[in-house]
Image 1: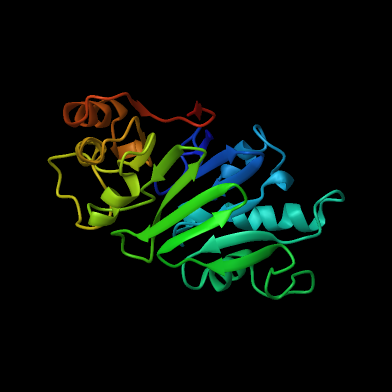
Image 2: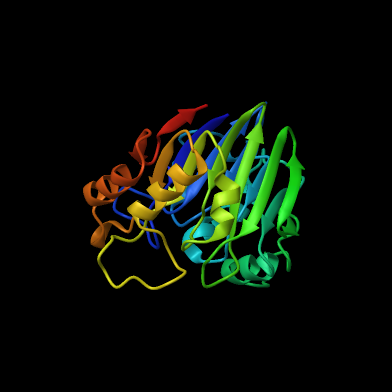
Length: 252
C-alpha cells in the first residue's frame, strides 16, 4: 500500500498545510480518507482528482470534509469528468451535511448532490472497496466519528481520525504496519476529555498494539509544538516515529 499525506493540520489550515486528507493506493485503487479544508489543491499535485475511486469522511467537522464541496464543482462541471457518482462514505447525515455546506438547492445545484456522490452511511464493521478490506469503529469524539483500518495483500494502515483514548483504537491498530494517529494535545495542559490524543497517548497505543510505525498528524500548529509532540511519542514508543507533512509518501 501507498499512503500520501495530502493534508494534516488540525482544526483549521496552517499557512502551508491543508486540513486532514490522506490518499491510500493499492492494487490500482485510490481511496481518499477525509477531505479537509484546503486539501483539494494539494490533492491535484499527486493525482488527477477524477481518478479517486471512493471517499471516506470519518466525521462531519469541517476540517475533515469541507473540500468535498469544491470537489463537487470540479467533478460536475469539468468537461472530462466521469459521469458516474463517486462513492462517499460518512457518518449518519453525511448527505444532508455536505449538501448544506455546498449551499443547498439553487438553479445550478442538483438538490441532493447525488449526481456527484453516491452517499453511504457508515456503521461499525467491515466492507470491501475494490481490492481493499476496510474496517471502521466508533471512536471517542464529540460527534459521530469513525477510526479506519485498511488492509491489502498483508499490509495494514490504521487511522484514528479525531479521538480521545478509547478501546476502539486498540482493535483498529492491532499489529498494523502503519499507525496514523492524531496528536492534537500536549501533556500537562487541561485537555478536554474524549476529544483528542496527546503525543504520549499516541505512542502508548502504538506500543500496546504492536504497530510497526507511528505517524503523528492533526497538530494544531499555532498552539502545539512538533518537537514536544515528537518527544512525547518517542518516550512512549521505541519504533520509528514521524510528524507528517503534506506531500510525504509512505509505502508498506
